[in-house]
Length: 322
Length: 144
Image (cartoon, rainbow over all chains, first blue to last red; front, side, top):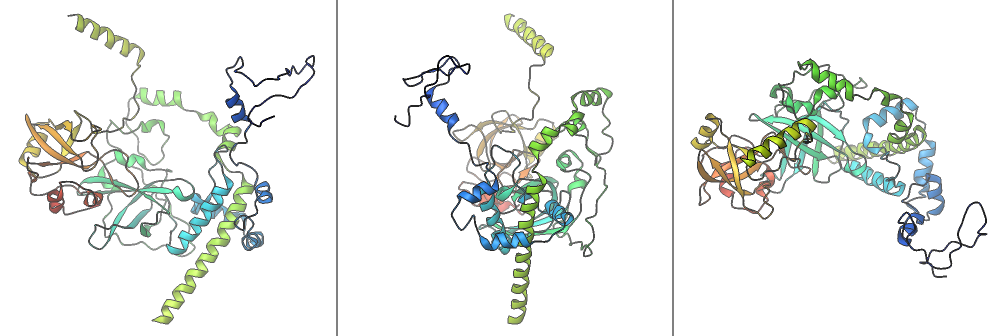
């Protein structure tokens, strides 16, 4: 039997399972399923196997790297520290979508990210922090261009992790999206490390310009070592409607009273989904489970420690040369 | 007469069912899109003063949607004027700035800018692009 003709094996026609005897190739059935479609469904899906299964099958050095494995196994890090690391570097967490997960891809991407972090210092930052990014620009006078702004958005996992900086220049609101691991970035600085009341500050587009104005010569505000990241409890007074989005439906915390007529809030309440907090299945689908997160974060912890020591060595070497 | 009857029926239908979409639009610069003139030309300021912003009446490319560095024809204060797009509200690629308004700079037929000064920052990518806007870039004082 050739491999491309899919036939079911013979079974007694009288069985309750009703497996019909087919001697010729399957034609479209009552449901319109063609041969090709059935074959497609029988084919294994993308790689969303367990880590151990993948390791068993793979023979390359990349998968079974004894050095990395031993270093990860020996890592002694408290769960608090790992959780802290997870908040600091959310882009290392795998994408939670089950169907599009590919563990080999994730691993490769993480390796590239470590390699990039050896070259460039990617500081800790959050939405609401004031940052400066220097980009290589072949047409600029010094071959580089610097942009300062407030971080209003951060998203993405792996190499595609990115963030948006916003500023007002000559009375004109300007936003630039930067990719964290883009090789054209020369320098990333956090000038003022702080958090805001919301996960994203896209509403600054609909706020007066003074809320998103940062001078380009903004001096870095140092934070004492070991201090917690300060929370800025600033409440923004939005402009009058029309807005980019219906902010009254977003359950924002960092916004003053919106001053809308009663019907807007009524409608927002109608459309709210307060039960989603209790939807365990939804939570499960949209997050990575803790065990796996811990193994990933242990690897990140070990690797970043190595990178730090490597950078320290480089610094001392440079000082010696001087 | 028949037209107005049909229109009123259609408006009623739309209002009754609310079948129109209220999602955010693509912010594409097509024909009849309103733009902001960001040079110090008298024409641009006068258009703002009378409250009738310039409108695009033609885009000089095949797609008929204006992107960064494209040439457009504007209807401004009853005149036809050429202009270059120097800033977009639309979502942009990484490292390319997105502005809060759609900005254009007026030029004459021969490509010389009408104004003598630009009032908004200019995206640096325009310097790498091929186009006839070197005279505009020489006016610019601030690149982002």
